[in-house]
Image (spheres, rainbow, N blue to C red):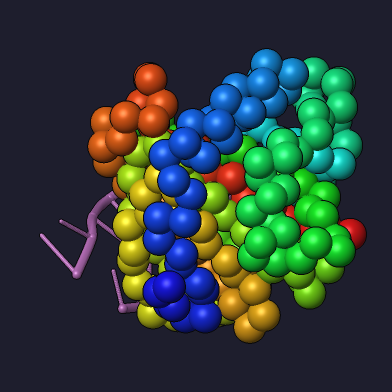
Length: 198
DNA sequence: AAGTAACG
DNA sequence: TTGG
């Protein structure tokens, strides 16, 4: 386990078979709730494609960010796959399941600017992240924007925990090593982030 | 400020 | 390595 600014990085936690099974589960999620491209409140399209599973999905809007109980199409989000909940039980808790599993797809040029996951009502539970597919260069800062940052390469099967003092740490993705994994037939990276929202 | 620019 |  690597620790960076309080963030736990568990390398290679899911084996290949588990990664393949989870990727299959996520294909089913994306069939029910297709990926869409979010637009920031100030009108800039994000480069990631996004969907979600669970009670809520994370959404952008003109008024800001929020959690919503329905996909933009109007359908409810599909349930969080059991394969994902199993990782949550192992790293977080068996007593409380996440309300939201965000599914972010990073294509070749996709990135994610430095930000904090701060739209939840309850910060007492950690955010759990699972990486699948191509490697991505992950940047981790501190609680304050402007704090020094460090980078770590996240690869398929890695699990990251942001909890406790690191729950509100800044983080982002600088670059995808497109084609660096054979997990996803069309390449790219999928990142799951599970959160307790309320 | 979940955009952008930068691997170190 | 935050600065813009």
